[in-house]
Length: 305
Image (cartoon, rainbow, N blue to C red; front, side):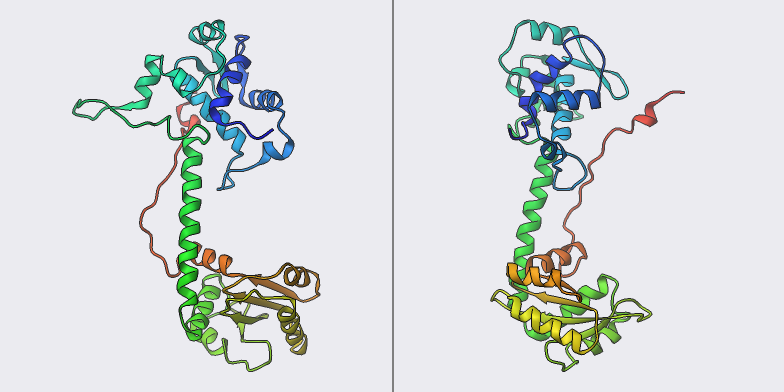
């Protein structure tokens, strides 16, 4: 089955703790994964940031909400147990526990509302009703991915509207930011000046120039197919070169990708989507509007020896 949302996890989690024993986080994750018949792939599936498994994140947030409602409590670091209020809740045999159900508990209502420092009227910030499927952390991560994708497309549209000379300068900037090419002056003298068929430029692999990388840069609308990659590979062989980068504003066919992966020469393919994504990561053609840090409790800080 699909990975359950965090609200679906709430009742099974409370039932798991219903024997009144302290349960470790790992024990709980394993038990709930079995309860929902998750595959190994589903258990390992990560959030967009790649920092945490989705299922672990959702179980964590289910714990947060049950704790805020007073149904479970932290027994000690990494361990949880059910409270008397939690036992009373189970005795009523609810068909499900979700955010709406938890609103009957005053502690949970306090958690979902915010009060200003001046004691003004409480305002519901809908902390727990953003979505029935995603946790607040997921909401931020998927929102970030949407912004990143839209920005990436905007960048690519701008590049396609610029001149070939601008595209060459952009390629220089990108490779320099990645650590290739030595100085900007040296890179600028090599890009677009080779004159060899199928090769648009040559750039140093490192500042010392221990090896060089041959470049093909195409500002295209059409998909780049295998013949173009074969032509570039042939040009590399003619120069006795072992490494090449093929950059395009469009994309590559499956046959082109397979060919590049099988030949002896190492050819890296960078399509338009990857190009714009690299630009965002390396702050080329973009500026920072805002940044947010997500923090969590440092349990070691609160440990008394």
